Image (cartoon, rainbow, N blue to C red; front, side, top):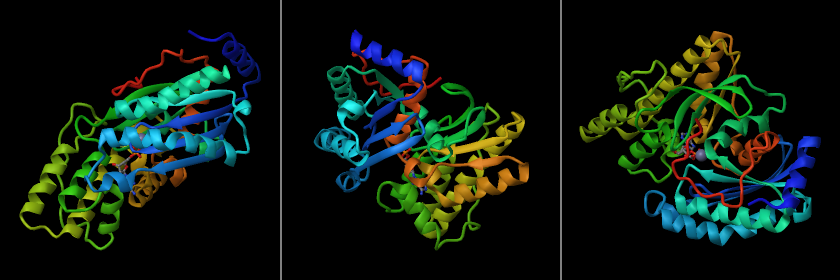
Length: 345
Ligand code: KG4
Ligand code: ZN
């Protein structure tokens, strides 16, 4: 079902190609709301982290995540509107993450977005969280436009994608087991560091020697695929044998970073990509940025990554992705549901 009022609004947006989008993100443990104009201009981007709530359990507890989203979302939306100096009547469309993620957490955002879109009579756009990560660089680089090669490295995914056009992707490589962020989180947990482990490994690595341990890269069928599970098991065995935690953190981080950057740069070269874009939560890692920058410079490829605020989960990137979906008329009905295993391609 779609309301006539929303249809009229959509027609106007398609004509003007301009829209102020209210975006909601609640796929995991961060609640986010943002107001984004024309897919590029962030008028506001607010978030409430649940880290303190989950940390004592060593990871995200899905039921607690859903309940905390319920408690915070309404206030966050108000805050996003206020800091953008907008009222509900100024919003042209609603974008919301509908997957992949934790089903209960996703449902909180999806339900709120459906209710608001219906009440306001505006188009609703269900956004794939990974498309959000892929769109985050548009917020930092106003001139960036497809085609480009992208490497998305998060807690749930490690993928190399060719972005052939807006909303159009080809999968070039992916992890066949753990995501890079997931592997970092698991090693951090093993050595007693708090959740999320990626930033903690990064901190501990500063006092360690990355040359102490080396890790063999497992063979994968796809040339640009990854397998982090073997690296993780090797690190686990080293720790059991008494490896110094800081050296292990530094060596493991370095192995993960070299693996990602080698595959991504090789993929970009093989596809004659002039640009390689890094995004996702792990893109916040300084070593990853540095190494990608160095290898891209050597290959004559431009390396780009979003501002720190748009690397880890945030609603602004959902607003950017939502805008480009909107321009294609890819809108959702009020039957939109949460899809925990939603695929992009
Ligand atoms: O994109 P994201 O916020 O959520 C998902 O969609 O998964 O990514 C979260 C992941 C976690 O595994 C976290 O440990 C990792 O990103 N991460 C980092 C850093 N900051 C976040 N990994 C390495 N270095 C960092 N500075
Ligand atoms: Zn994410």
